Image 1 (tube, rainbow, N blue to C red):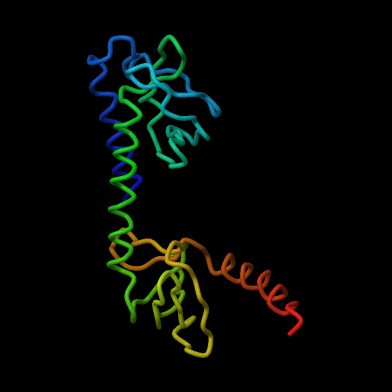
Image 2 (image 1 turned 120 degrees about the vertical axis):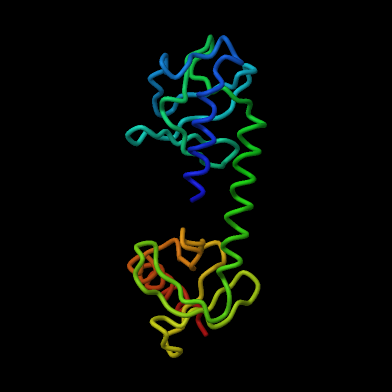
Length: 185
């Protein structure tokens, strides 16, 4: 959902190319590459392209990642450009993050059924203690695990989803277990 909104916002960048004559229009889109520095319509640096996946570039701006249609990039005097300023893009990203957190927090309640990133059943939320979320794995209260609030998001349907698979959770638990046993107590 967040990605779709960001992609729509980025697509809007291509529709207003007339505002910045030095920025190429979508028809003159640049062949943007991973590692490219991207500049705004004000000439200031926005961020760096982390990767390209098909028709989508992942733009990193102040540590935040934004999916941007590859066709949204143009070419200016300094290189790859977008028809927006860094402040505009940061504002869109921050708003999307706040919305995603609000949706996650609305879904993250005691009794909620959580699924994994691959939509497999994870368990039931038993307790929430600050940023710690205690899950009864498979609904079995003898199989408790604790994940952090940041490990969850709201699924598109508003339900609670862990941002990991069961295999990733199992691997993290297995790697943490020996460390807990080596305390010497």
